[in-house]
Amino acid sequence: MVIGDGVLTSAIAVMSSLPGLQYSGKKLTKGALLLLACVILISLFALQHIGTHKVAFMFAPIVMLWLISIFCIGLYNIIHWNPKVVSAIYPYYIIKFFRETGRDGWISLGGILLSITGTEAMYADLGHFTAVSIRLAFVFAIYPCLVVQYMGQAAFLSRNLHSIPNSFFESIPDPVFWPIFVVTTLSAVVGSQATITATFSVIKQCQALGCFPRVKIVHTSKHIYGQIYIPEINWMLMILTLSITIGFQDTTLIGNAYGLATATLMFITTFLVALVITFVWQKSIWISGMFLLFFGIIEGAYLSAALMKVPQGGWVPLVLSFIFMMIMYIWHYGMCLKYNFDMHNKVPLQWLLGLGPSLGIVRVPGIGLIYTELATGIPAIFSHFVTNLPAFHKVLVFICVKSVPVPYVSSDERFVVGRVCPRPYRMYRCIVRYGYKDIQRDDGDFENQLIQSLAEFIHMEAGEPEFCTSEGSFDGRMMVTRSSSIQSGSTIIATEIEDCSESSSVQSSKSSALLSLRSVYDDENPPVRKQHIRFHLPANQIMDSAIREELMDLIVAKEAGFAYIMGHSYVKARRSSSCFKKFVIDVGYTFLRKNCRGPSVDLNIPHINLIEVGMTYYV
Image (cartoon, rainbow, N blue to C red; front, side, top):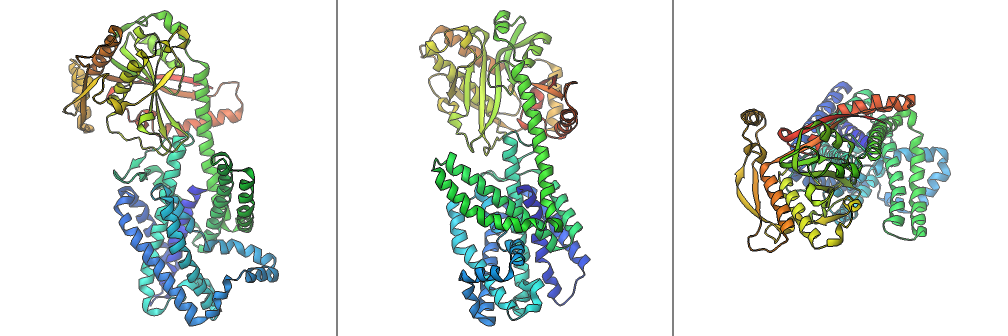
């Protein structure tokens, strides 16, 4: 519904701001207004890539000017047309209204709902502003200005019943009509921007939780946290918005769809907040029930009235929600089946121990980072590597990147490190944890943080001899490490040397073919200059010889370079599966997987250091 709200808000905001041109000196045709609306919408979505922070400095002045303008116009209309309208605050009149209108009054709630829609868009900016600032803005600016403006329109209509279709623009005094019209159009763009940004944020969080296909996420600001841009979603929203604008060409029909989307969104949010009160805030279930009953009755009345508008445009948000829900369901279903396949086909640890420290192959210098979705156990794809490759790296690290269901994970708790096999195997596991609101920047420092985390794990493990007492406990016991705490600590010393534009793995290679390949790659993809850290052991530190040898192997392997190893998976349904499952996996999930970003791109893995091996999953 939030995604549907992002489509409908832009359409109705722009379409409702343009009819004011009809009351100017030159009358414009309906086709001309539609063309102008499409131009404004295309411009709005085309400017999204420059980032909110580059245009946001205009948002606050526009919104404040808009609020002051409608407050002044409302106050003028109250005084000029009918000062007695202020008595509408008295609750008696709403009771009298329903008593006299009955069913028609109840149905009219679907249209009255539009008087409060749009105010919820400010809460979409919770990722950019604090809750206190939003509360202050609503209580002291937005709410009083809206109430005064709607009272002013009611006072104007009480003396001008013929002006009901476009009461706002006709209630504006002629001397200030054009300035107000310009501010109205600009405020419509600002309101649309808020919901578009909210759509980007929701989709990013769904993707982090494995409920949406991988899409390109661009962080448009280095200083303001959470401002993002998703190109694929942006152009998809633009196409949907233009389709609705051209298809309906009527603010009433779009308003019906917009009202139903907002009412449903509020109603669902109320139920979710009731769950938060009980399970997150640990409050009494009676408090949660009272909250749900009070707000549920109010919002349920509006929602029931909005549902009466389904045949008159209200079906649009329902269709959009169904389409996006099916996309999310298919993707999540396919990911779960793939993960379950990995869980049930893990490589037995005894088989790996039987190969010996050399794994039955040649161990070459370097660090191999094997990406897997398993937090425990050895993935089946590793047996493919060991069986088919004649050599493997001296140090192996199983990397598992997890998005946990919390907003943020601090850097001190990001890395969880453990050992997979006994010390001579030089095999480790590292779980990298991110919150669904965390920004995974491609800053080129992941390798250094990983080395520091592994070194700290080796040092911490030495202080706990009981950590690994039997072969069965090598895989499963892990420690949280703080990579930022040992820049010059007692385990290893990190020394920053001059910036390096080439990866260490290529610099250390003597292969002319690889060097030429690197030069071609750099011509097409200019490398990002990053800090190059060199690690070494403190000369005066006393430590066990086995630990010193392991740390030296880690440092030497780091200087030899990294290789990123990942499986290229193909997911297919078994022959015995139902027709529905075959369609969902072989058609739906396969289409989404082929047309979304690959996992290597999503994880910012350097393409020049990437090794992929294909594997088919029959789920």
